[in-house]
Length: 336
Image 1 (cartoon, rainbow, N blue to C red):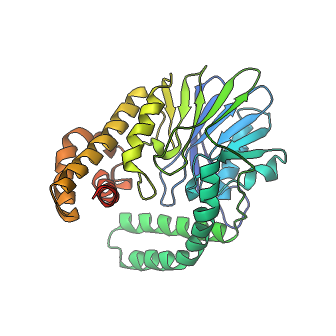
Image 2: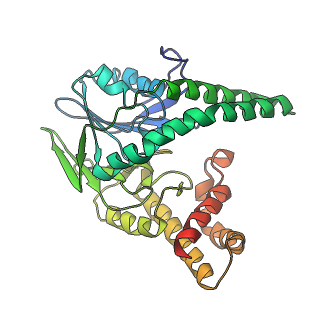
Image 3: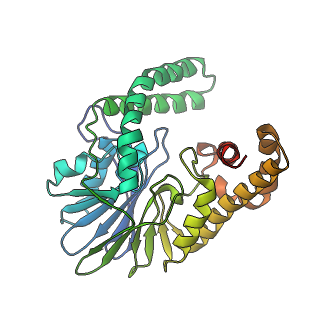
């Protein structure tokens, strides 16, 4: 099943603009794949059990989460019992407030490290987004006024709409923090399936949560594995590989990633290879005394033959080389 839905009909501070493609992964397991957008949304995993639904991640704003709530009606009539946040980044939990409003008995779960990061960093970043939003909108308006081609104007107009709607929603946001937290492992034993919530180590953030369905052989990775070049600004590149090695010990055949289309196990090998080879290349260059600028010049050419094509699926939306240069900068700061 694949069904495209958007949130333009939902009420809220503004009209919504998020779009998702609902896909069946296994019996009772679906994913809402987020369409690429200027203000990125994450994917949502939807796991049905005998007495309710588990939702994994809630997007960048409430109107996007409302799309999922509406789309659930085409999958099941059961209520949402649990919402899982895989990490503290804005595009994975700013829609939390929608679920307890729609399902008063719903609990929001993450691990202790991620909940602490939400309190320590996530809440501050909401304030930062509110403060920085008007400047971002002003820059987009200036770019739109200077745009030369119809295509550029159309893209900038769409981006401006996304920025304006996001600012309206984040200004009105009522952050809903997780109501339950675990340390290493939490298991939900339902009558018809087991749902394992796992902390395997630092990767994309200090507290990445993986959701594992052993019977269905499906794993939900958040942004510890995604379909384009990863963001490492809050990450731990050297630990990331070890965490992915622990993930590889699980018996699964399908991956629901934080961004991008669902993938098979082969993608984990490719993704892990990229992180490993990038870290090793930067470490070797730093050990030889290379400057950051020298490393950023040499390492892309070294990695391009293996990784540029598989990490360029989304083209200009998430250009491989630009992401790689940021990853090199983060890694260089940590190893030099």
